[in-house]
Length: 246
Length: 132
Image (tube, rainbow over the protein chains, first blue to last red):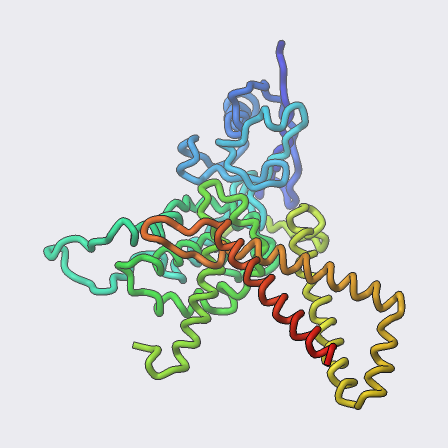
């Protein structure tokens, strides 16, 4: 039985065309194949001009995110059998500019990640000679979930607010800033506040919740944003009383 | 990164393209019903301040089938808004017992219980005032 499945793939070649188009490819249908396997088959056997990103093939690198039948998915974990026998529509992640075929421009996210200072800003900086910053398992548990983000951008593709308001800092960047705000070793809350608590930060979010639904690592960025809203509100009220601020 | 790139426009009916987006918009829309009913309550307080007879006339006007239908519609909207909102509370409230996070069900349950208790207290006050 030479069974096949059709893939309608978004093609955009900036050197050849102004508007994108869909190109249909017939690939072998195998139960253990994922959409990424089908794209690799196209690239290797049918059309070497198809461009897309991928690396680990095991849901860790976060580089093979695409829209599969309109849903943001890691193509390395989207099995063909879940779509068979219908054709599968493969597009670049929504809400991002397209550079070529299935490749999106990530510059905006990288810049926002810097704006929210998504790295450890030690509360009490000390030289390496004084040893590591210690932490209890309970302190680790508070933020561990948010360390699992693989920057796959599925949450941005699912967020209608980011689509409509590209200035929105967005789910993953805020979730990563939240991760450091929750870290007992960190003292960067006020340094991140300007970006996170701005209009383009947490207050742009209307809590659609789709970012958390599509997250392949169950990071729950929607929860992180709402918890930062609570932190921002408490910080505001603390600023009103003389004993509230350090 | 520079160079030619293609920006896909967001369509105005984006919220109809996915069920979860539509349900979100319904939740947002129910806020309009609640805002409208808040204005109605302010109008009601105004008539209550105008004396017994004008207020009785105002209340008699509320007994029409259309008024009852509108009240039922607002009640349905308020329930949908409240229930969907309380279902989201575990995302907002993170409580820990050592290394264990308090379960979503416990946070939702506590919020629903507090909501019902608050509603019962308000209903009790309204009935007590109505009986004079």
